[in-house]
Image 1 (cartoon, rainbow, N blue to C red):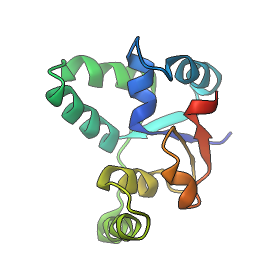
Image 2 (image 1 turned 180 degrees about the vertical axis):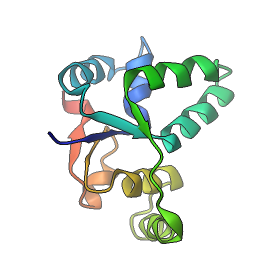
Image 3 (image 1 turned 60 degrees about the horizontal axis):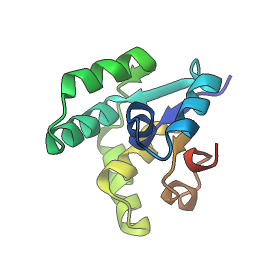
Image 4 (image 1 turned 90 degrees about the vertical axis):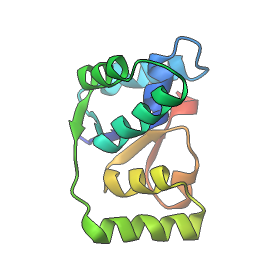
Length: 128
């Protein structure tokens, strides 16, 4: 069994009734729910989005923790520097660069094509 790291946009699509990628996210979740995981970084990013959009962060975080396993990979200074390198070389956002580091050798579930550029195996959210 291969583990799949779920990026933030996967959960945005899954939890939003109006998101254009919701059906795709539901299909991926249904097929791979026992293989999916995410990091505490995703929870932090969703908390920021909830704050910006005046939504309930408790409901969002609790929903995610009920859907998938939450891990807190220790990436250390080296991992953060590697994320900085990705930001500079590929013009990635800090969150995208850190997600790329956190997922390690696992595939990443995302609609963000920037992960293809850095050589990660991506389950394309927009194609399911």
